[in-house]
Image (cartoon, rainbow, N blue to C red; front, side):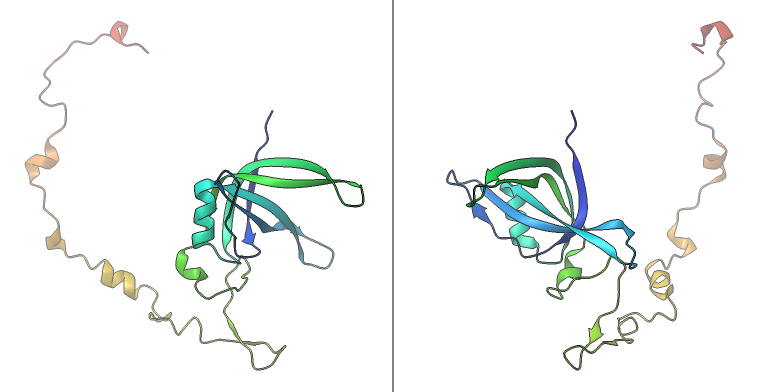
Length: 192
């Protein structure tokens, strides 16, 4: 039997580290996962999937991850049933995490609690409660100009011919098995 779940999504709130009565650390969190297809309205539906991480992974999540961070989760699906206060039988599903991978560099999450689409979009300026004005200078305000994208590469990889050791003609002409000598190998000796 196989019970394997692989998810990539964004965490919906800051993880809160908790401990069992036996002192084992755990974190329960919800991962927002976009479906791979668009609906009739042209939007992607999102599933909110409950996950639980234990021990060291839980401690790392609570220490380094904030709301909106992109995570990769591998684990197994656990189905639990319980009776609610009205006496109705309820079923809950949770992904028990085997591994949790942080899929963004640390610096991309430093702007705070801001959700981003999978395609990177420039930040916006807001002058009113519901106004939208894109910041067109975002891409050009970086330390490197976009007019010459190879300028930095050329500076980093500034290589001079004198940096390399030139091979002598003897080194280039020498073959690896020249010193072996003559051997008589028949086709019957070969295993293929």
